[in-house]
Amino acid sequence: MSCIFCKIIAGEAPAAILYRDEQVIAFRDIHPIASTHILIVPLRHISSVNELEEADAALVGHMALAAKQLAVQEGVAGRGYRLIMNTGPEGGQSVFHLHMHLIAGKSARSLLG
Ligand code: 5GP
Ligand code: ZN
Figure 1 (tube, protein in one colour):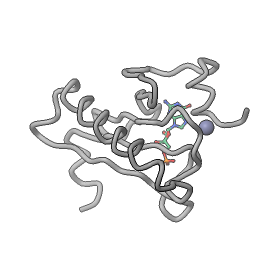
Figure 2: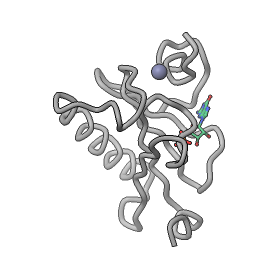
Figure 3: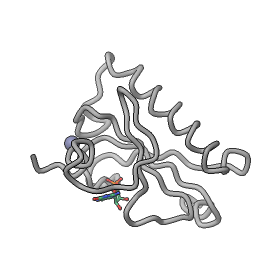
Figure 4: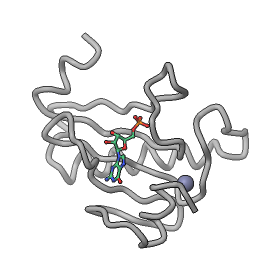
């Protein structure tokens, strides 16, 4: 298994895990770009948004709801945050296991201008 997120899910690589249920796991990004930077990751290996199918619609919705809950937990829901899914090399994706970034805090504001 070469996928780093699959290794984290399997407990074979360390991570600061904040949340886990039957569909997703959430852990802190190892190189945070803002004071809150969390990754919401499906337990099932899907490479990117490009590989999503109609049957995955509920899973993606579940990722967004997990992100919303984590934003409350982190105390950033009121001030706001960004949810980002980088896709493909020119979309800035570096880990090819689907994930949603939850980014909040002062430096999150300048991300997209
Ligand atoms: P991408 O660039 O694919 O949208 O995002 C991948 C993210 O995963 C990056 O922000 C990177 O810092 C994070 N990352 C890469 N390897 C690891 C790891 O081993 N552990 C954790 N917690 N985050 C990682
Ligand atoms: Zn994987």
